[in-house]
Length: 317
Image (cartoon, rainbow, N blue to C red; front, top):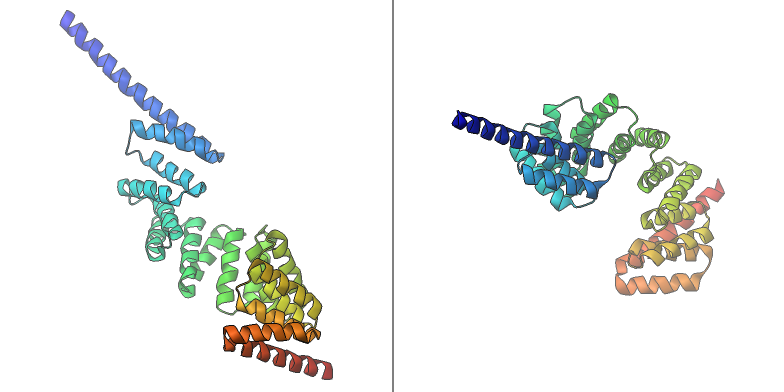
């Protein structure tokens, strides 16, 4: 009788311990998930690491740890956790997408594409999965492969700024300027607000001959990123084509203050000086470019000649 009672008591103690540990694991997973949701990433990492001590192969803890590290920019750590989670559940759409993102961040585009493709096959209804695959294709110039996925993403979840921005990029690469303009403008209407968006839209407006709108978008980009050298140079070139040489000079000087090594900024500044009538300054830059690389000096002379002829033709009309 005593032996039977002892065995029963031991069984109850063991099962109680198992349930307690399970409850504790679930509580840690729930807590870590909530912390991740409210963007308390460091706290989430601490909580989920505790969960892994109870179950080192817990898929949820591994995936969420990867997401927390990714959000903090710790891409190497994120990849480690995503790879372990993937080894446990390779047919999970979410982990394929997350691992694809980590591989993309590491510049391993072909491997990233494989995982994004797997995610899309496992869940073809996710706008995010299609968008990630489409954007990854665009990175390596595979526009024809990428655009259908971006359009699918937009049809599943309309007006997502990142998707609209990528669609604009795809059409810009294909030189379909009207379509690029359309999607960039849809992106701004949907709340897109990054300097690249306004810069790229400015470039498209510039190519379409809409100089005032181009200038406005360049300036919006520079409000968000004051040292955006490519944008500063484009604004300087726009001012040259409009005959606004003093303003062009100021922009190229600003570009060179941020990056004094870029040849096109020196060429632009030399052209602006020459066209503005500041010949001594223009000659100084010309001599410097000729000494550094005669092809750059010849390019400066070509730009000046071309712009003078263009302005002469414009005034003749």
